[in-house]
Length: 295
Image (cartoon, rainbow, N blue to C red):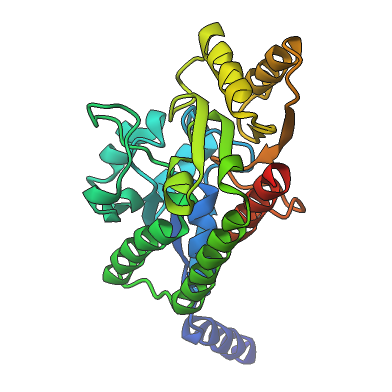
């Protein structure tokens, strides 16, 4: 009996001596673009969770119970800001009173922001379409994470990849003749892209998909297609294709030769296997689709 007691005591001592595995720090990101970036730069002590999956429209995203659970259990939250996460803005601000909430958009200097209205009251949140600007935002996020004692050992290498991507995008777009550099899409998500790489961008809707398009918007776009001889228009993965299909149908009624040049990933990454499931893959897919249709 004494031997059994001694043996049991040794087992208990061994259990107490073993170091428990430390829990990972949980960073919850609103968009897949941010989540992909952080997954590339943090170490194995960090768990990165993205709330918005492929095909999700962040302008209309309504938090589910699962999303709220993730936000509640997060150690740090990283959001795009600039009202991209429109329906989550109040929630994020309230959570920010008790835990770190980092808004990538706060890292962009005012002079580089674009606006969707003449009064400059509505900042354009689609920063990721200018790769250099996206890097500036990530610099801000990484610095904020470091202040929270989060290690980001992969950032230098990832940043090099992004800088190379920025150069590649510029070279590809420059291969399209200037008169053909017109990008017509469902909503005005590509303004930063146009500003950075020298391509005219026109969206049927405004910078937010909350805005509705009307018959006049469709007619105006058909007029533009006819006047400029535009060859292709583009649908977006996170928005219904009906608006652009209406434009093509309107053009065909006038015997104008225009086609849908492909699907662009605007507000969300692509599904696994699409080639656009990472930020870099998303940008490459979009540029290849645009260039192939407009050349």
